[in-house]
Image 1: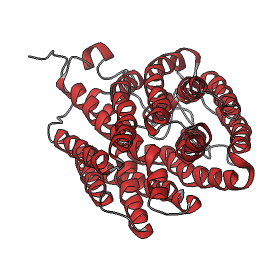
Image 2: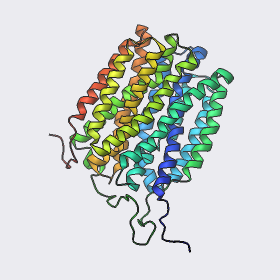
Image 3: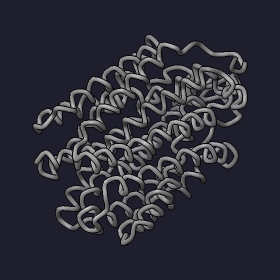
Image 4: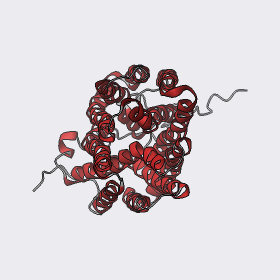
Length: 409
C-alpha cells in the first residue's frame, strides 16, 4: 500500500538549487572580464583606467537596475524576469565578441551585461521568503554558485583564449550563458499564497509566515542602520571589484604566466565557497555581526599581504584568504537585511543598499587603474583597498538590532 502522506520535497530546495546555478553563470562570466583585460590592452592600446571604466559603468547600471528588477520580480514573478535577463546576458557576450571600439566596450559590458545581471537581488530575496530558519545556510548554498562560477569560468576562458583567441572565447561563453540561464529560470517562482506542504494543515518546512513583517524602504532609509549597511556594501564592493578586475594582469606583471595568473581568480572562487558556508554557519549559530567582523578583518589583512607579494605562491595564498573573506561578506548581507529591517521590503532594501555600495565598485577599479597608469605600480591602490576594508570592519561595531523608523538627528 502506497503511503500518500509521505512529505514531498519542499520546493524551497528547488529554488535554492536553481538560484545557485544562475549565480554561477552571472558572476563567473562577469569575473572573467579580468582575464580579457590583457588581450584588450594589447589589441586596442587602451589604458588600464579606460578599460576598468567599463566595469565601473557596469556596477553603477547594475546597482540601479537591481532595484527595478526586485520590484518587477515581485509583480511579474521571478521566472519571467530571469528568463528575459538570461537572454539579454547571453546576447551581450555575443556582442562582446564583435568588440572593436571603446564605446562598444562600455555599451556591451557596461550596460547590456549589467541588465542581464540585474535580477541578482531577486534571487537572493527568494531565500528569506521560503525559509525562516537556516537562512544563512540556504543563502550560502545559493551564493556558492557565485564562488563556483568564479572558480571555473575565468580559467576556462583563459584556456579558450590561449587556444581560440578572445573573440571565439566570448562566443562560447555567450552560448553557454544563454542556455543555462534560460533553462534554470523555468524553475523559479515566488512563495505561493497557499503556504501548506505535504499533509493537509501541515506547515511547510521553515516557511516564512511573517512575510510582511518589518520596515518599508521609506522607513528603512531614515535609520542609521541603513547608512551603515550602505557603508558596508561600499567598502566590500570597492575592494572586491578592484581585485577581480586587476589581480590577473597584476600577477602577469610579476612574470607569472597568464594561464597560471588566471588561477588567482579560480582560487578566490573556491575559497569564496568555503567562506560562504563557514560564515553562514557562524552567522546562524552566533550572529551576522561577528561573522562580518571576521570577514572584514581577514580581507584587510590579505590586502596588506598582497602589497609586497611577488612570488606565485604568495599570490595564491592571498587569493585563498581574500576569497574566504569575500565569500563570508557576500553571504551575510541578505540575512543581515532581514535581521535589521525584516522581510517586508527585503528585496528593495537590499537592492538599494547594493546600489549605494555599487559606487564603491565603480570607483575602486578606476582608482586602481589610474594609480598604476600614474605610478607604474599597484602598491598605493592596494593600500587604499586595505584601508577601506578596515573602515568596513569599524562599521560592524555600530550595527544594532532591528531599528525603529526614525530619522537622523
